[in-house]
Image 1 (cartoon, rainbow, N blue to C red):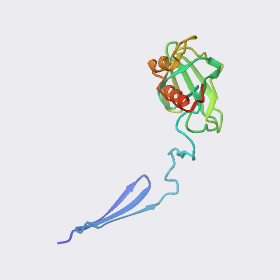
Image 2 (cartoon, rainbow, N blue to C red):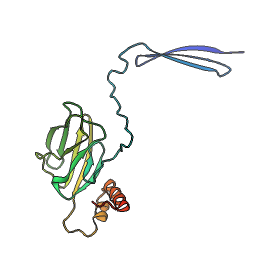
Image 3 (cartoon, rainbow, N blue to C red):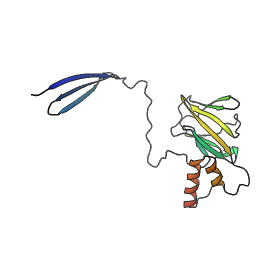
Image 4 (cartoon, helix red, strand yellow):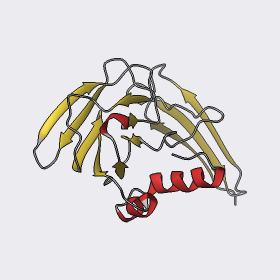
Length: 175
């Protein structure tokens, strides 16, 4: 005895028909009925050849993920994100212990920007976000005259920077 059926599936503006029978032959056809079926979805930026998912410099920190970041000079700190800024996009920075909140425009079509001069850069916990994505970032100032910077950074959780330091030592590029 052969059993067969056809089902009509409607999801997110996409219509699909599904046919099956007892010989386990399956057919799936989809038809887009609405030209605006992707309205409300964010476009995905695919990586280009040679592009990384990590900052290029030891002093750039990723605002798109929670992390610890070590710095030795406030004028060298650069904010980085894996996707370019869109027109009118705002970067939100909140210093947790003081609850001071800052809103800064991210440069259009740029992946990096300098730490805003209007925001004091001191050790501690910050909330950093673009749009609805908010991440906790702990900033740690590296003390002057420290003997083993890499070990100090590792102790303070700046793992991404430690990995970059190791790579620099392997390729002899220095800091």
